[in-house]
Length: 482
Image (cartoon, rainbow, N blue to C red; front, side, top):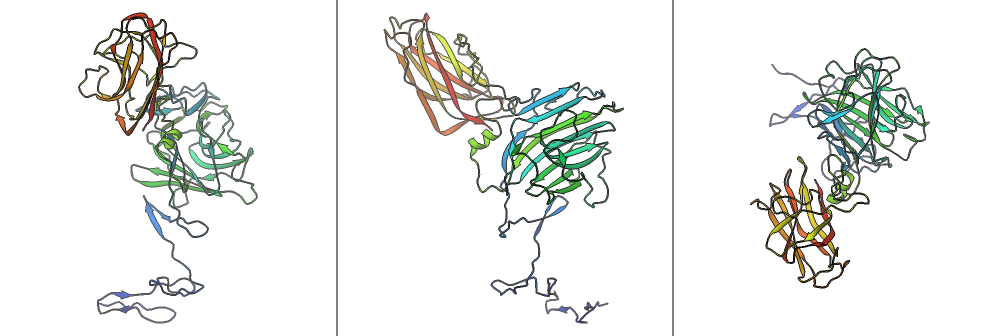
């Protein structure tokens, strides 16, 4: 049985070619052929077909600027936190809590109400130290994995802004607000909501997305802030389905999206003045902030600086990695081949002049935090003589750096050593004499893997054991965590 396809208006039928191909012509709304051949003339009133791609279950149109240039995204990392370990990174975050007891662990993430309290007016806030500029044409994005079961008389929100304890309205910013289990997007300018909160709906735009399993499941939330609007999506990563969507626009009566040059990112949960019957559940698995559409790309050192992964701080806790205590001299190191004099990533040191020997000493032995990796690009070593004048025998020091040892002992066979240079103090050198500095940059950086050791090694081939003669100095390790 054959089927004839015929137009209602013209009565013309579709043509089938000799190759059994149905021949049709796509037209735009004013009658122009939408498909054009290479170098074919285009009428002045020609319209276009939008190009889209698939992201999970959503069709997303390709973005262009006002001139029609395709915008490629080019994400620039601004902040990344995986909440690993039991200690919050104090270089990245500020906290403010009343009654609630937050906690962090590698298996549980950051839990705002770890003891499941229902106390009235209890609050827990996590806020970034860093503030983020919203430049025109430079969208901002935050991406987080969140579990939230917020019942009656509890509230939670997260986004850009400076929250004030249990005050629901953030003075300036854009936030996803969770009230009585329902999710909304709120835009505020100078302590006033720019418009009524926009509900986060299912993609069909009809109903609020289901929150029945939020107590036990994590959802991935993307908040994309552009010049004049913001889009929020909520994804169920178990199915890949986008379960929530909202778009809020800046009203034409508003000066800007928010009344601040820059704002931090934050998340918080709090109880109302009436105690809830059910303790609020609010947990973060990770938190990422990005800026997009830059026509530049940061190098490794710039990206590491933005993410708080310099050599000077622990990448997870933010604790100082160098040996340097305020207004305090370094303790006198015990020189050993099998144990570290200091367990830090360089810093200040001092040791009593030993007898000349072939023994290598592990002056510093730093274990790279588990889960991270350290890229060493070089080292700078400075030292000077203290305590006593060099007496009958000169002091000669050979310096080296060791990489990727599986143990602190320098006898470990898998250590890789790189030579740095020699410093010496001649007989008769007085207190305060400074040896020429050693400053090495490796043409090819050395990597130290998770849990492995970076050593600063010294050997004193010439010297006399003199307790009163002390060599003091400092070691600066060049590089970054990745």
